[in-house]
Amino acid sequence: MAEKRTVYKIKDAEGIGEVHISDEVIAMIAALAATDAEGVSLNGNSTKELRSKSSTKNLSKGVRLTIQDGTVKADLNLNLAYGKNILETSKTVQERVKSSIENMTGLSVSDVNIHVGSVNMVEEKAK
Image (cartoon, rainbow, N blue to C red; front, side):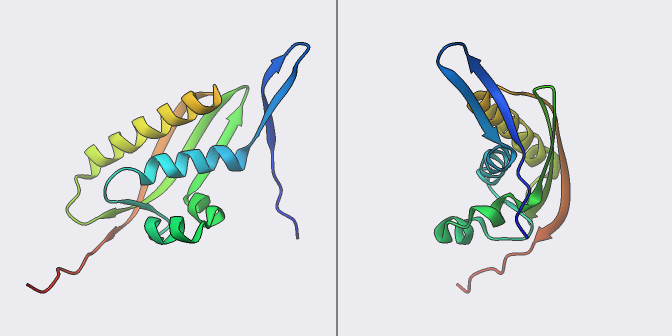
């Protein structure tokens, strides 16, 4: 079964053409911005592992978007590293996701909702 993709027109340059962007691309922008924050991963996947495999579909699994009238509402399911301040980390992620989507697409972001699903416990290395 083929995946359903939604495409949004973000610019109509008269005489030149139109610019369309897939919701999958917007989700990828949000996922990369979120996982750029230290100690953050989506859906329990290791960000480094996903980037090394170039598995872009898995990276955006923890992102759900609602786009209406050029306004984006993003919901991100995060896993945080143990010891990270949840409020500070969430605020950082919200700011990065909002900024990245707005700067890269020209769409407005109304909400970036963070859902912390788990805390990743990291084993200490033997000294």
